[in-house]
Amino acid sequence: NSTVLPGLLILAAMLAGGPPAPAQPLPAPPPVSAGAARTLNDPIFPSLGQLGLDVRHYDVALTVAEPGTPELSGAVTLTLAATRPLAEVRLDFYGPTVTAVRWNGQAAPFRMEPDRQKLVVTPPAPLLPGQEARLTVEYQGAPGVILDPDFSTPLRLGWQAVPAGEGGAGANFTLSEPQGTHTFLPTNDHPSDKATFTTRVTVPPGFTAAASGLEGAVVEGSGTRTFVFTQAEPIPTYALAVHVNRFERVMAPPVPVGANGAPVVRRDYFPVGTADSTRSAYARTDEMLRVLSGWFGPYPFGAYGVAVVTPPLPALETATLSTMPVRSSNERVAVHELAHQWFGDAVSPATWADVWLNEGFATYAELLWTEAQGGDGQAVAARWYAILAQGGTRPLVATQAGQLFDRSAYQRGALALHALRAAVGDAAFRAFLHAYTARFSGKSLTTADLLTFAHTQVGGAGEAALRTWVESPGLPPLPVPAH
Ligand code: LEU
Image (cartoon, rainbow, N blue to C red):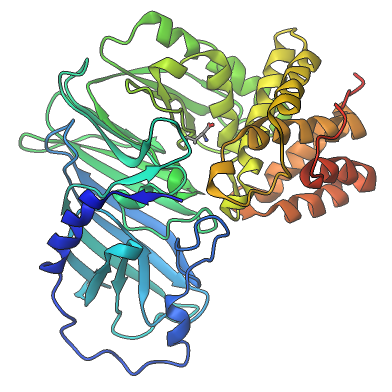
């Protein structure tokens, strides 16, 4: 699980003197008030989210006055709906100090539960199914620190700050998977509640902001520039990209791989001074889009590209704009993150236990890309198999946080697809992938949903091949598809 730094008790201390006590008596508790405190009960991160809350849209305004420092100020308006009556709205938030909360434009009582990383807002009346509300939260200061212990170097999730002088003029960006978005944005921070985003980022002159979605006109202020982005298709909260840097934005011709051949906007963001050897990893994005959409179906968003970052972090498939560290700037990782746009960003896991649905499919794209280059896909599969045979393996549904991004999620997940392909043949496998993305784009599913869907699409033999790789405690035999 994530570890909260004791240093961030500063945040708790600030908050202790911060939000006012509720100004009015709470409404009479409705029959469901006990349920209002219920989370989404994720098997890996049980404290995330709120049961019954459906955030449809986030309208985010972030101001980064001094890029490279952690400080930011934000104002976000969430469009909320409910699937059960909610007497309180409990957002995941471990961010800067909250300065104002409004419910449909009117000041609303709120409190922080820093230990649970929740911002709790009491609406004037419970939010009922069928209603929609606008909740505005304003905040300012430094984001909270949530560490991901899955990596040998502890990885700080969420809002990143790259100080000026470390090879640049100061930069900020998001790297949030699995649960870092709530360090800088109040959210229902769980992949089962996907939403659309409008993201406005205000920066000093000379800096460029980038974010998930299509870019609108830049608004020049007095001593500031505001960049606006529209992410029109729902994505999980962790997949939201926000970047601030001295960037060079490089446009490339649109690629006609969207739904019904719609053009996909192509833009990449390179920090000024990025080496050609880094940029060259992205020279074939056009071809990658064509190859992967051939297997997976239409590209699910209106734009694709990368934003390169300098710290030695893992790459992340932020929607429409993968976040690519310099050290991961190679074709294998580039194709992996691109594949995640379908698997992860458009088609999302219903719980964190199902994250192999992201990593297995994205890893399989590496094999498909190798084959598209005339390389030996079976040799790639055999290498994955050897890794698992040596290092051990587990059934694919994760039971603890340390498994989320392990070799089983990646290589065994990929071999599960190789087994499906071997069982049904290339044509049926391709048709299955197209049908899967068509059925689940914009949605979230469990591993059980995948197996059920496989049964309906490719029948019992295909489902059984997949199921063996999903469930068996040991390592099933290496699948060998006929071509
Ligand atoms: N989803 C990322 C990947 O593409 C990994 C994550 C841990 C940052 O492999």
